[in-house]
Length: 315
Length: 281
Image (cartoon, rainbow over all chains, first blue to last red; front, side):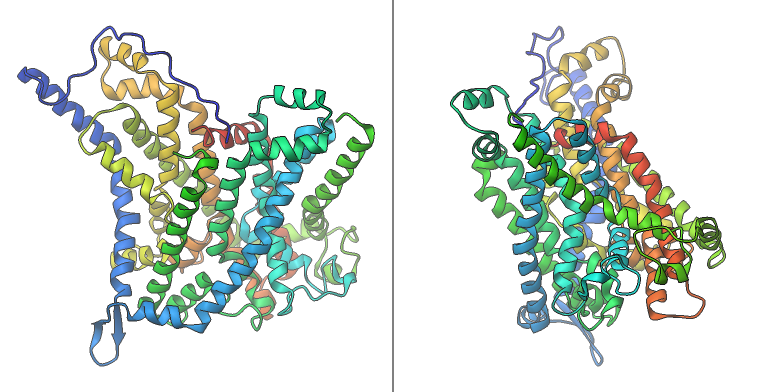
């Protein structure tokens, strides 16, 4: 991403020295720093409380119940890693994982590709139309995922949709994954375009000028100079897309009634975890699946960031 | 573009993509003007008999006017969660950047470590915990978890750290201002661009939220639009009697996105600025 750094004004010698740290000699000063600590804590307290209540505690609780099983006879029994073993061996979990991986392998490059193409176009072509296009591409992001999916559900419909002339059944077992991929592409390509465009805007223009003098065309400049220079933004956009894909949930759930045979109750790992909890009351097993999925996303994203840290400029 | 041919080609590609992005909206606009028979019988991308007013009446009367309640709920959740989480994130982000207190670095390291925890994985355990505290099926079950915005805290900390010099705060302290006063009158005004961004993102996230309210709420008078429209859609497809018909759902979808798109176009300046703030490392 753009490496523009707004350094705070060069540190002029402060009129009053920096506030004393704890362990200062005068007792009055120690009091001042105790007061300072209290003030600092007051500022972060609401956030800290929320962090514990809605992140740490649910995480710990999910892990705890994932180690138990409810049985009819003995109630909750400690099962250690049995739920995890079951989840890893569960063919329905595996199918869901394979499905989101296939989805991600195709949808991510297609969408990032469209976003990059669009960003390069609006960066190079400055016209009224390109300004209009920038807005048009971004508008789908303003639509809630649920409503965007409902809309596409209607568009795919054989009876009322505008695509019925193609004769394609968009929600058959063979096509529904691609149809879902189209929805997410439509919804997020413009958002990613804006992110990449912002990165392009931060590049120094002189580089293109010298390339032009060397005889490079616009296409060459776009592919050989601009694209590598925004690799960090591309990497981050790819990461967030992959994270979203692994958690794929809302779109399949909304389209489920169109073809429950194709969009099953275990269509993606998240849909499966949801149904385990709310259709079958299997909270322990559901927690294990959720926790496993969360851990994969969490660890995966850090590995990804670490592996690409040279290019993603993240510290 | 240097060559005219290249520029023409670029505009053709942009034109095709624009059709792809906008055609669904055109369909929705046209469809919302048709009655249910018109939806099934007329050409789908052009107007036939005009029934928009009638559809709006049907929409606001369906199920005792619950749609308006959903619209209000969505707006309420978005405003309260958005403003609340922005205020809380601003206080914390400022403290992490500018105040000294024991445990500061440890807490911030924890925040950085947890920023990548996927929200969807937390919904089920949060639901179970809140149901033990008898807090599910209430507005707080949706609002309280939405007040936590680790990424917002991180963003504001970076912004304050890079754009507010210590001397500015020190000068106010020497003038005898207390810490809260320094924050309110010196830091907050300087944080405005970043605050607007965090507010916009958290409001949109809350307005779009589906998984959390879906799990937390069973009383349909508390539903936001997203959960409400889905229940109508499911009933319509199952063909339940008395269910909202497709023309009502289509009109409901249109009414739901018009304020969003309007707000979007008016605030687009801030979006563009905001997307780069996070990028400045």
